[in-house]
Length: 447
Image (tube, rainbow, N blue to C red; front, side, top):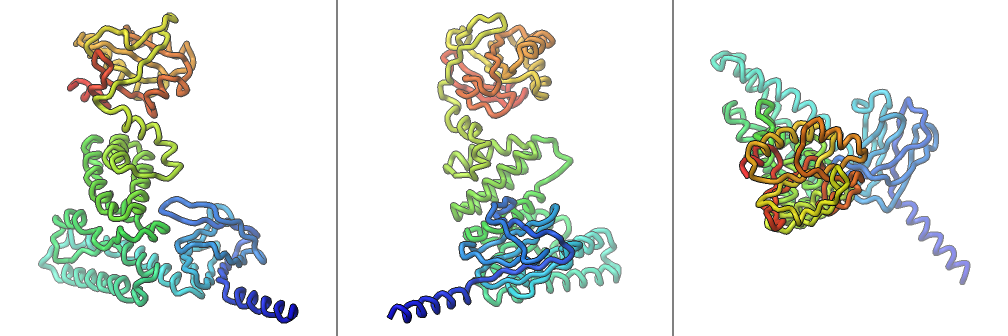
């Protein structure tokens, strides 16, 4: 009986092993015997496993814990292969000398469609932009204009045929849904050139299924977000007006993304991180105040950690709230109590001598301070070296209330006010109630 039971168990084990998913990736012209497997979500990659090669460049592995979505196998110096895992066997070949052109899915219909889609997108974007450029410049009464228009129509037809038919034999599959939502916008040649930008702003997101949270494990939503933002980018605009344009784009993206809480958080996280990297602080604040705080969104841990002070400041130090009291020494060593300062209005500034914006802003505020004589200024330095702090005060003739404990970002005042950047300003009334949070000189003048 025991022998029969052992045989039975062995047969079950063999049956399981025979049906286990196999992922084989063969790379020519590579000497590496080890690669790193990452899972992808937008532009972020997360470590999954370290893969050893059978021989140089020959990687074969199975992992029943891999969820559906995109993965990246990284090897060598800055080289990698991206593939889609849908639970079925995968076999991919490539040449390390030219991965983009040599990448080939031997076994995996999903990856065949994916690689074809990537190439088709690249070709369609290049060709359609060139043809559109000719149509925008060439005389419309010329035969060549009609020939160019015909060529563009043919290009668009072939592209849409792949997106809507070839790739949709299994419409519920991950790759079919990915392609449907990731497709590039196709603009009818009947729409005049001067109307195309507005058309893109209104309709380029029509095919994106923001309710499909499984697509978080791809670059679909992040790519569509950055594509949409480019329609609002105008290098001719001053920074303030450009940020206002981006805020319009943000409203559209996040309103559509709110159809699904996970997609909503994914897109919000990407936008916050992106605008933060490129220095669009007002857009970051706009997203945090109008979406992250308002809807209590949970951002990615890394993003949230770097922005926690920003979020807390927006949540807890709103206009109308009583600001935390500050007791700090001035440049002579005397302790100053913020709550004991007698003034109808107090401008509280957090700054540092090494901050470029502070070097420009504080002298301008000082001019306003001397000219208006209608508010007191309490300037809290986040410097750590006493000489740096005192030299900055002396060089700029800052004859207002200067405070610092020379603990930098570790200062209790910095923590109490959730300071995440310098300069940061709060306008307080005589009872320390926050009456304004100006972000620049012009806003301060208004207040």
